[in-house]
Amino acid sequence: MSLITLQDVSVKYDADPVLLNVNFSVNAGEIITIVGPNGSGKSSLLHVLTGALAQAGGDVIRSSGLKIGFVPQKLLVENTFPMTVRRFLSLPAKVSDQAAKDALDRVGSPELWGRQVSELSGGQFQRAMLARAIIGRPDVLMLDEPTQGLDQPGSAAFYQLIAELRDEIGCAVVMVSHDLHVVMSASDRVICLNGHICCEGAPDVVSTAPEYRALFGKGTKGALALYRHDHDHSHTHDHPHSH
Image 1 (cartoon, helix red, strand yellow):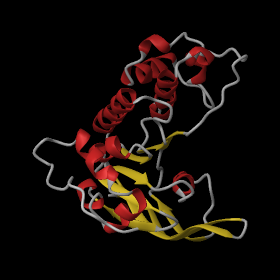
Image 2 (spheres, one colour):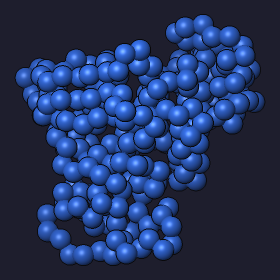
Image 3 (cartoon, one colour):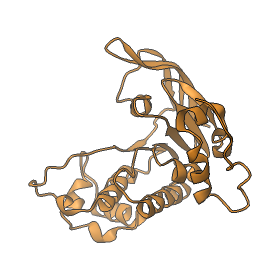
Image 4 (tube, helix red, strand yellow):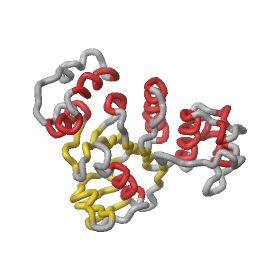
């Protein structure tokens, strides 16, 4: 079932096109990862999906009553401003203690409850933001480069948690990511973006597509094997290619 469908969607900043004629759907329960070079329109696409950014052309069709949970790329919290994680979870809308506790338990961080937001590590803050995003049991969970600043084990653990939440809540997940090697193994579908959709499909299909190779080079193919099963190395050999 399609939760959000984009039909020929274009986005402009001033007069400059950022996205052109984008067509795709977010289906219930699937994990979609959006990859692409800097400036390729990844965050803009996410903001169009959430409704935070208006498209210049085309249609965005959302199923009625759709609930979206969003984890932004950066959220600046003033260090001098006292705020516990419990209070942070009630922004912008107040939530019950039980709902807040359940969300922190679900992301595996119940100990953050009384901590000051300004004192959290990067990984702890990401989990607090994730807890806040899932409180309403969203139909779609959207994350904009959620592991920026985390080391590789931290990133891998975070993606594992996202996959578990998808299974538990039954939500679709749409992620923008630069962690190509980790992301691919968690995704049902990868969308390769560069102002338009260059290619899309299952991770192993996209990873061998010439359009993907042209954008990311052949080096990513070996990295892709890191989190894939050992028997699945057939597509990880580098082949010469030209830019």
